[in-house]
Image 1 (cartoon, rainbow, N blue to C red):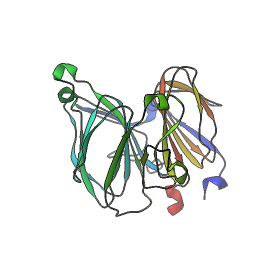
Image 2: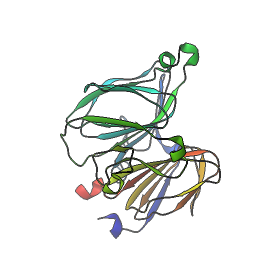
Image 3: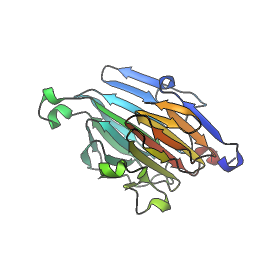
Image 4: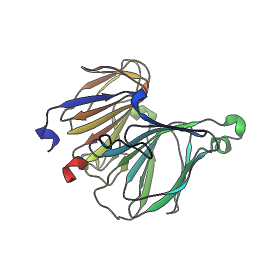
Length: 258
């Protein structure tokens, strides 16, 4: 059944209700089932399978590990993350830099917080805080690829910006492209009183990466809160304080293929 055939649903998920993985070097909060945390009724929304809110201490990170057939988008909120993969790509991801890795037929990569090396010694070390999001691709088994691009801060303060998209409508406006024609990630940085209007799409996922906002008709949302919209959109989101939003616009769902 498509979203157009269902009653509109606005499902608010609070930050404190997320699955959590806490070890000595990592504090990770999962919006959906991930790793050892599994709930058969909470595996995805629309095309979005993973929305991990990660804090990694200096000098630590994810050692080399494999991925396959997944569009992986990383958005850094604080600090810097060093990426290396088996296709020869390496780089530093920092706030305002959109990064996409298409795992395709198979890729190995690592992600580490090397802030103390990048910034001149241990006294400059800081945690890296980032959100990593996984979306199912249109095609499986494709050649792995990588893309990144910096987005101007002024643009992010001007409203919702298409950060990563496979939608034809964003072909010339999205910072980076992903391999799903029905999905797009938007980001915005809001000052108190700033407002944005959510896209109108069959499926939306709103994540308050930091700050506090008022969602029209549903009240206050804080850091780490998320909202899953089905068959509805167009609501106004107004910042109560300095805030950063990540919004997935999706025009199909994994459920339709089942």
